[in-house]
Length: 165
Image (cartoon, rainbow, N blue to C red):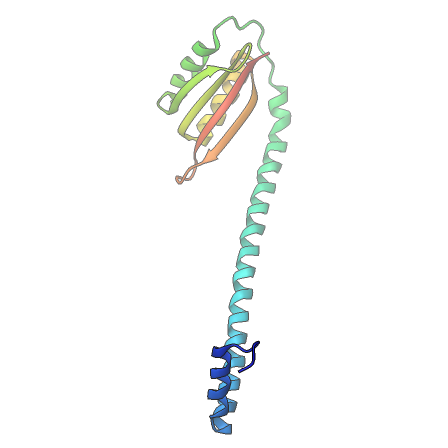
């Protein structure tokens, strides 16, 4: 045995050499077929991963197109004048009216004339409708928003920073 040989490989070669020529051909074709099968399975897994990534990209593009399509409508909403009501009171009142009060997990000041609001397990559509309402009725602007999907479709955890213009 040489210094560069591997004992298991040497045993496999000895076993193969001990086979009849017909058995050697059968083992060789089996190894080629097995290798081809493993390669095929790897390619199928890779293709499935690529398909999933393509679907995610398509969904994100569709979401971006939707946001672009409603942007002019959102920008055309007139900003109300005044608005001396406290941001905390506005958030409390409007989340109750919108059915989001049970999902409101807290609010804290986020700078001058800004409030960070946290929702857990809130319906996405109701949250977006609430954001539109506070913009339209109270002139609040979303300074920053973070939405995290949950295991339940259409339900999100959200952190939104509202700013008075």
